[in-house]
Length: 380
Image (cartoon, rainbow, N blue to C red; front, top):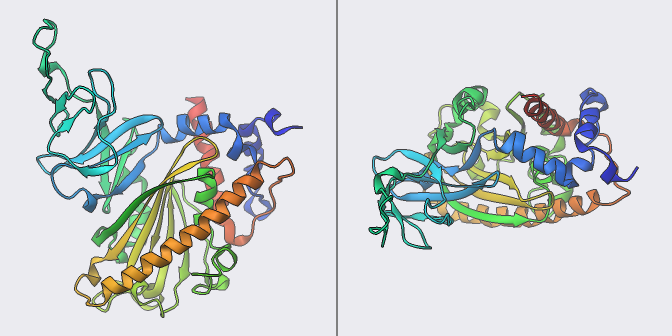
């Protein structure tokens, strides 16, 4: 049967009905069909929490980041009181989008007709409106959007009833308490678009099975397959751990860190916080990908990272981190090549999902999550 005659939700339901010991990769339809991409936006990205980055990147009043969540333009900023808030990024006059990218703004000025809003979203001024008798400046305010900070991460949600981030991720906070994830500072931030499905990139992060091959030129030799632990996932996240080679000093716990002991001091957590925040967390540094689909064949990526503040006074840390960033850039080139090849393969009529390795347990749990959320949304 041609792929366009297979319902992708039914295909995923059948795929996820078997135990992990017999599991296969997800069916091709869930990656390439527009109907499934639409279902993800409706039942996942409009309902779940989406990460826009780190709170320390929005440090002072006026610092902002713009994003699009399930088709809705949103801006997240630090207001004059020092609070984080999110709101619609659409002018209430002729509906232009307002702010772009990341930056700092004393006020929010529409680039079309210069209607101007305060950092709390209330309309401050509107040129040449005095002759409209129905116009009342005080009746205009940008609609607010839910915004929460958790361990230094900033999340937004379009669902007013979504459970708080801290509640959903309480098990993560307990598991990585010794890392003190709020005590890391962002040193770089970039945005990219790759020609692959967002789930392909998410799954690529979730398994380290590909490291020795895809990353043979960079990090492939820093971790051994036999040292990778892939436990069963949880309702809101999955993870796996690897032991880093001690030659990568800035991945180790700093001598001032007395919270981690033994192998914990060189253990890296690869955290997949559903639906789309992927964090590589070492005792010394972190980097992350926050993913949002752009149709079936493209993914928007927020890519950032930095160091634990335990290293703040280390005289060698800047040079070490500069080397690390160069390494991460090379790793991204490798990952882009691999994940774009996978998407091309998925579009082939000959593509068929194979059985999963024990090192791909997180991918199985990710598929279970997707199916559960789409079923849950479809029955509400």
